[in-house]
Length: 178
Image 1 (cartoon, helix red, strand yellow):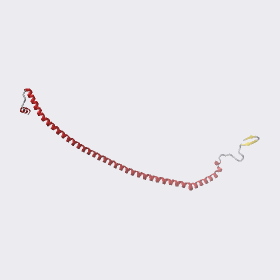
Image 2 (cartoon, rainbow, N blue to C red):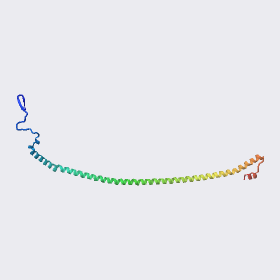
Image 3 (tube, helix red, strand yellow):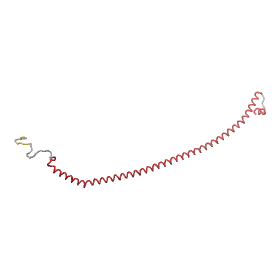
Image 4 (cartoon, rainbow, N blue to C red):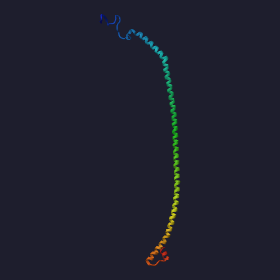
C-alpha cells in the first residue's frame, strides 16, 4: 500500500526480506540464546544468593530463634518465681488472718472478762445498797410497828372514852390489843 505526500510515495509495507512475525522472544530461532542467558543468569543468582545472602538470613534466623528460646526460658523462670512469691504471700496473708482472729478473740475474751468483773462489782455494790436499804426499811417498819401499838392503844382509848364517857385504863387497853 502506498500513499502520496507532496510528490513522494511512502510505503507502509515492510521492506523486502523482513517479515513481521510477532514478539521475537517467542520465535523459535531465538530460543537457543535465550536459554543460554537464562542458565547464565540463574547460575550467577544462585551463586550470589547461596554465598552472600542465604548465610546472613540463616544466621539472623538462628539468632532470632536463640533469642526467642532465651526469652521463653526467662519467662518460664519468672513465672515460676512469681508462683513461689504468690504462694508465700498467700501463706503470709493466712498467717496474718489467723493472728488477727486470735487477737480479736483475745480482745473479746478480755472485754467479756472486764465486763463480767464490772458487772460483779456493780452487783456487789447494788447488793450492799439493797441490804442497807432493807435494813433501813426493817428498822422503819419495826419503828412503825412500835408506833402502831401506841396509836392503836390511843385510838382504842379515845373510842372507849367517846362511847362510854369514861377513860379506859392502860391494863384494859393492853388486854384488848393482845
